[in-house]
Every structure is written in structure tokens, then in C-alpha cells.
Image 1 (cartoon, rainbow, N blue to C red):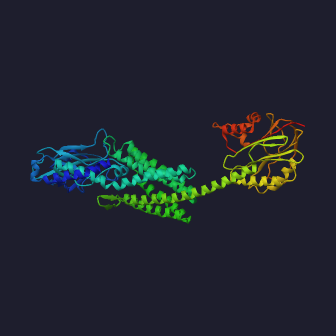
Image 2 (cartoon, rainbow, N blue to C red):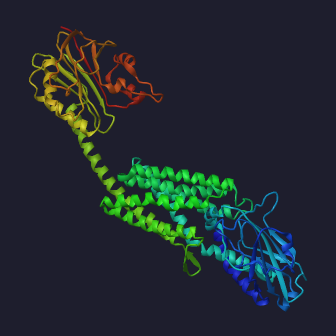
Image 3 (cartoon, one colour):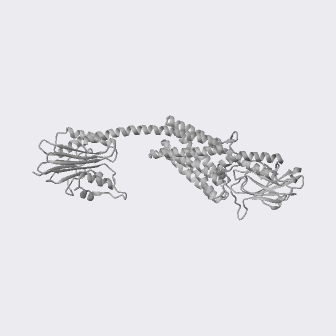
Length: 628
């Protein structure tokens, strides 16, 4: 719509100049206004000297004159007007009005029945019946009705109302038509800086959403995208809404566009809460407050209520408190990026406060003229704020990416080291077949195991699980494995007691579960347990005395249990198998674990992963070749 108007502006200007050269144009001035409604006020001979002198009828952005009003003016009629088909043109004028010349109605915008309603105001012209103006002076009257809450139309007027204020114009019908078309196009051109600003907001939203898609933990990217989309897109949609010939100015579509823009205030506070953790709770409260205020105002629009000034005070003076609090918090961070955002936010808040003050005074915010364009200071401050925020967040994004890459390299190195320490391939020792599978939930994990053949032909097996996951757990695993490498005592209970003393005070408040077993060539197995899942033999879980996990107290003691395994497979598992959880929230559980324990280690691990891995999975099986 805007592009079409801009392209047509040049051609229409030529038509207007040509038409104006052939016909004189009269601008109607000297208006008088009176509140109320009386059809008799259209009479040309009415004495209106007691009426209030007024500027020409124009678009009003407040509720101070809601209701019925009449306007009257007298104008000079040039001699050549009596020989032409005349017309009268008006700039955009809300809400519903009817035009009279010499007491005769010549046109109407909107409808007064059953209740006054109209589409969004726009430039219009009406034809004046031939010979209606016979003397040297003429009389024009306008009957007008304005509803409350016209301030909400600022959003849509700024978005799609291509208007250029001017007094009523009389002249040849073709000249008047061309002039009103030209003014419509000029209004579109005048508003282009705002349109480009809105488009820039949409691109800013795309950038925010893209950044959030790569780092889901950074919710500030999400809120930035939502702020930009609620700040720019509604205005662009408003172009279609406010230029539609079907949607009323008080339709639910218009209210929805307005509400979306007002919700951007709440989203902006949610964004500030993410980047200003010092006052996060207070700023989140401000976001909820802004949502409530916007919903109340939207309700007021629907009910045609009259508490506009209360809402302007709330939005204009209460919510800025939260923004200024965020400025203070960002300045206290003493970070260059935070301080840059704080200064840009302070600039934007200053312009908004200036605008709110003028709004309460029923005055418009001054614009900057740049050729045929009008630049609104609010647009400049908003663009500066968004650009600064985007630059700062992008630089932080790059730093985060660099840190993440370095962390991934460290984790990969830790994973390789852990694999070397554990040795995940199947091992064939004299008299025993060992099969082990280790699948951490993250890059590195907290499970561990150790198998070591001893001098007397027996085999020592230790399987354990460090509480927690990630690099900290992996480092503690390395310490445990190092302790096992130098441990001289090979009795399961004594070994666990020595490990417990070694790790107590080094777990950072956590603990370690472990199960230690010694396999003898004759099929006997001696097992000691420190809070770990008991191993399984032939599909059944062994009953063992469960000692305290390692690292809780140095006084912990552990007992040994001797069982005869013969040539059967003994399966050791970590709790990542038992605690695997499917989409329905159901755990794999001990019964299924026991049934799976008869299978090879790889099949057990695969089954647990398919069920739904949430923790590190370790499966180790030991089978004797023969019982002696």
C-alpha cells in the first residue's frame, strides 16, 4: 500500500498542478465550534457568533472532545466557481461526520446508526451539487461524532494513516480529487522513516531468534526477539488494518494490534531481567505489571471506558521506574557492554518520558523534518537502543561461542583420557572373559570400572558411580582410578575402606557408590558393596550387605559376601540402566534390569538407551571359562 502510494505521488502531483492551474482553490478558515447535536445548526442563516472560535476540524489524539460537535464556517465564492462542477476535500477526520453546504447534506463518512461507527479516517472529497453556491459567500457545516479512547488509534494512525493535515479545500472537482490523492501520497512518503524503522525491528527479531536457536540457555536472545517483533510487526500489520475499507476503527483487529504493541513493554522488562540479574525479581514483577496494565487498557477499549489518563500515568511514570532500576543495575556491573546498553536505555526512556509528558498535556511530540520525511525522536531512540543491544549481545555471543569451543575441546580431551583409563574394549584374561560398555550421558561421565588380574590367577573388579555428571565427576573418577592403580590391598572390603578414606573430603559434598569383587579360578566370587547396585547372576540380583557410599565418613566399614558363580556370567550395572526413563516417565526398573542381565553388555546398554538414557550407563560382565 505504501509503495503504491509513493510510486503514484509523482503522477498525482502533476495532475494536481495541472488541475490547479485551471481552477482556483479556496481554503476554508474562520471556523467556529459548538458541542451537542441539533440538525437546525446546518442552516446557512444560523447566527453562530456565540460559538467558540476553533481551528479547522482535524484528527484528535485524546478524549477531551469525545461526543457530538458541530463546526461552521463562511467562505468567499470566486466568480468562476459558478461555472464549474465543484468539490470539497478534507484531511483525515475521525470518527463519523456529515458535511453540509448551504444547509444541504452533500456527503458523509461512516454511519450514525444504529450506533456511530466508521472505518479508519482518510483523505476524502465530496461533490457539491451544481448551482448550490449562488452568491459571493458560502456556508459549510460539519456534524461530527467522536468516541472515547481515540488515543489507541495513535498506533494505527502511525502505522497506516497516510494523512497530511490541511483545512477544508473547495475548488473544481478534478482539482480537489487530485489534491487529496496527492496529500495521501505525501503522507505515505512522510511516514516512510517509521516504516523502515519497523522493518528494522523485524530483522532485529530474526537475529534474536537465530541467536536463541543456537544457545537455548540464553533467554535474553528470545526476549530480545519477542520485543523487536512486538515493537515492529504490529505497526506493519497496522498498515493493512488502518487502510482497509472493511475493518472498523474500533474493531477487534485494531484492538489486537494495539494490545500487541503495549505487550512489548512487558517483554522489554523481561529482557532487562535477563541481562540485569542484580534486580531480576523486581524487573520480572514489572513485566507482569505491564501485562496486567495492557490487558486492563485493552478491556477499556472494548468497553469504551474513560480512564485513559490513569493508564498513561501507569505506563508513562510507573513502568519507567523499572527501566531506570535496570539502568542502575547495568551501570553497577561496570561492564562496557552493560554500560552501553544502560546509556542507550536511558536515552530511550528520556524521549519516552518527554512524549508521555506532552501526551498528558494534549500536545504532540515534535518531529524532525528531513525533506519530504518526518522523523520521530522515539523512532531514533528505539533504533539506537536496539542496535546497541544487538551489537553487545552479538559480541557476548561470540565470546560465549569461543568459551564453548574451548570447553568442548577440554571435554573431548577428558573423554579420550577417560576412555584410555577405562579401556572400553572387551578383555580376555586367563580363565575369564570380560566385556565392558561405558556410555556417558554427557561428553564425560561419573561412572568408572577397573579390572585387574592378580598374581594368584584371580581377577579384581571394581565398578562405581560418582554422584553428578560432567567434568567435575570425571576428574573425581580419575582420582579414584589413580587410587586403585596404587592400592596394594586386594581384599574387596579392605580396598573399599582404603578408597573411602582417600576420597572423604574431596567429593565436594557428593559421594561415590562402588562394588568390588574378586573372582577366583575355582568359580568363587568375594564381593563387597558400598551403596552400589548389586550385581546379577543368571538373571537374579545378589543379596549383599549394602555399606555406606564412599566419601561420606571415614568410619565406614564394609563386609564381604562369598558366592559360587561357577562358569555363569556376573553382570555389574550402574544406576543409569535402572533409572532409564521412557517418554511416559516410566523407569526401566530392577525387574527389567534383572531380565536383561543375561544378555551381553552391548545389548543391555542398547536396551537402556532405547528406553531413555538420563544418566551414565555402565555395563560390565565377567564369565569364568571353567570352574576349578
